[in-house]
Length: 308
Image (cartoon, rainbow, N blue to C red):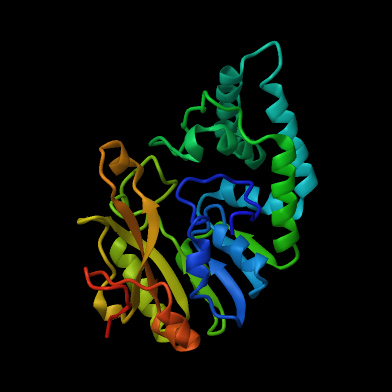
């Protein structure tokens, strides 16, 4: 699914894992709900395969969701604005680095989502960073000038064609979004990385609390809601984040996320695995799909692990 349109280059996006995640998406989804949407990579992938009828894209980061709304509803205007900002960095009155910092300052003062698109395209590795005041403070990538306008236009038009007219975009607490989930919907959740929840971390606009999240999942179980959660992970013997408890009665799968760049620099060939948790309501819907792409949390041969 590498040819899918993605105007927002967001570090931590599930774009590269979308094909593996979609293995566990049923064919009869009324609404796909992403409470922690980020770049909305899963919604885009699901829409490209025409699996869901409607979509709810939510993120607590309002400039990000407003940007997604503009991309979906006003693609040409958004792409034109981006081209104008992108072209300014090549002017004679200011160099590209100074231009970036100028745009960053204006964005932090105005929260204009159109400026955010340029910053995301131009910043280091598409990696979002915030200071303790919630201001975007990532530096520019000095080796590149960001996505070229023609490529950005193509990506924006592609996303708009997939999602326009059937997508609700909002910026609410994730629990409020989940209140409206129905039994024939599917919820995909990729919450802020564990270890930062409840405390300021420059990678996230806002965190969540681990035990509040567990309580929310337990409520979804009682309501019979189908959901998928991307949560913890590991590299070799090192685990990242606390696993979800057995009391939630989830199916746990490990997805191979590729070789760790950090380990490669240290001369080690270590692969990173990301956890995927499937609710019982979902596994009851998809049945035989569970026989594919499964790995346990142990060192046994590839399989799946049921928490019962």
